[in-house]
Length: 242
Image (cartoon, rainbow, N blue to C red; front, side):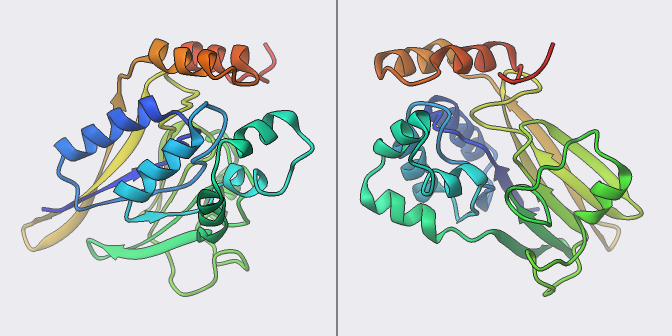
């Protein structure tokens, strides 16, 4: 029985990432795949990149990983960009936009946001049609496989949904969860019994020291600290209308 760890949306929160990596080690996964957004909103994007490079077998590109390289008119983005060295900047530019593999007789496709691209957001309460379209082969995904399983990040909320034998799941967020204020990730476990193979999806929540993370952000004088504090403590998105 083998298992794979899927993480996403670190957002510069190395405190949460360290705890999640320790949890993954305890579960003895054979490899770790990260679905992007290594950088911003938290204070330690550079460390998050290095930890992911060290521990993850595959890292795909998230929207933050992309636009932090392009938008230097925004003071917040510029601050996060300035924390990175040239090798880390180069690394973000080389990340693939999706990843496909077979596991437990299933074709699995992983990306950050959706089958339309890294800037197309698909929420957990979107229509059946929008969720079903996540399985389509598009100009963004290519047509190498027909996926049985699709996994993504981006929305910072864990979910799993079934479509006539196909499975759509979201990992939630390691560093900026917006459903429960605990770090979130997924383990996919391969099982074989009665001459049949199946995949189990185990959603994990990990406690970490939120105050330690916020203290790092304060000491580094990170922009939009107040918004970051609200999200980490309450799991409520900073721009959500009450």
